[in-house]
Image (cartoon, rainbow, N blue to C red):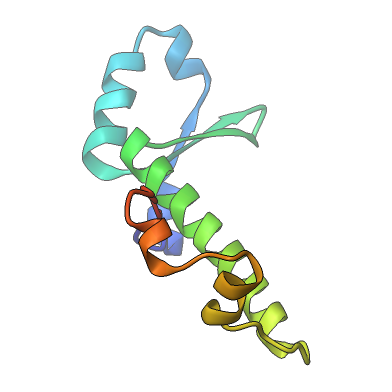
Length: 106
């Protein structure tokens, strides 16, 4: 996702009254073509319009940042780690027990 500079921000501001004037389709086309729009009401930001793809990317980046912060926090702790082999032994498992197990990682 591209960062917005001051010029982009100023160009992206649209008054909410344009929606009342039947220009929603034009506004949505501009969002699709150029990116984010900031809708203002009474000269104050009311909402942000963005494409679903940009929103999804932003949310994925946010979630990744949260996971990275949690990983950093855990790595900073003085913790004894348990090996994979020890966990398998504790539960009485061997690698053949996992042959038919399906795992999905995101």
